[in-house]
Length: 224
Image (tube, rainbow, N blue to C red):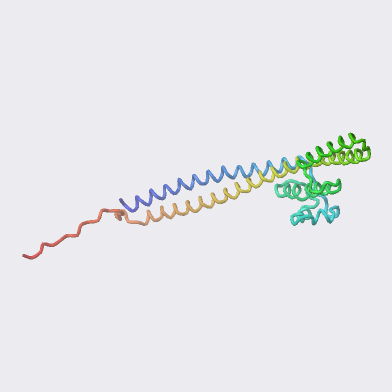
């Protein structure tokens, strides 16, 4: 095979691969754009605003290591995935934890409060059966507190779940953007290699061959 022919075949194949990579990069890039715009539109529609720095309590600022993000985003509208994560994990979660402690159920969650309410209901029934009105009233007070707290927890967990889901969606969008840039980079490399192949074909002699079958050496007859 002529070396020039081989160069043209390989360079042409490189152009096709590069074009395919560009098409894939464009398709993945549109997913990144969609995810970014969708996240911003959905979050903006909620009209959530981070508290300004002067309104944040010491507890809100220092509850966990990530709580410092509330200072970073202070006063800003919630419009991005990272903001949604910060608001869900360090603002809503902090207030849910504080509400549980204030109500006397430290560490309680929406799920665990169901069992707590069941137990308190049983305590009320047992106290009434014994005629212990004071114990029944105390248990009823705790039950009312647990019921109110569970409603708060349900609302908080629902919002946290929605915000963290949006955050996860934004992460996938960012990964799509990274993949798109990588594909564009690979396409550029393939185009460069293909161009080099065409140049090499032009400067290579038309007669130069590759993969030619090896010729058997000519053997001289031995002298008698």
